[in-house]
Length: 90
Image (cartoon, rainbow, N blue to C red; front, side, top):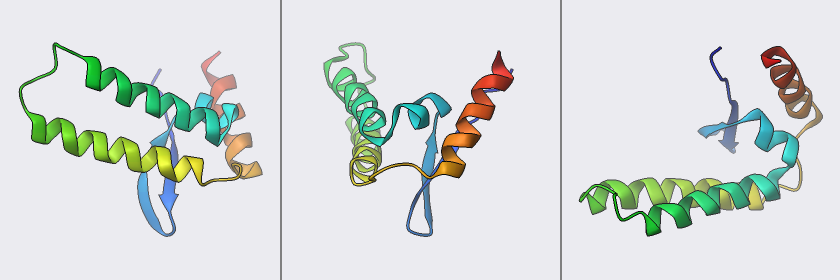
């Protein structure tokens, strides 16, 4: 089954997608997951030798984590959509 994500916006500008599980865990936990991915990227010795590609990806992830940290909570509609998505996968 294809895993869908919920859209994350910065104002009217789309910023990416967030998984339903992260929506259910809340913005702080979602930001912590992204920060964990950033740390893992920095420690990955098998990463490609393209620092520009990694740095742009790291900047994108860092921006997403910051946006999530600034979010007090997800809307009721987003949480309901996340519940529906996780139920459909069962």
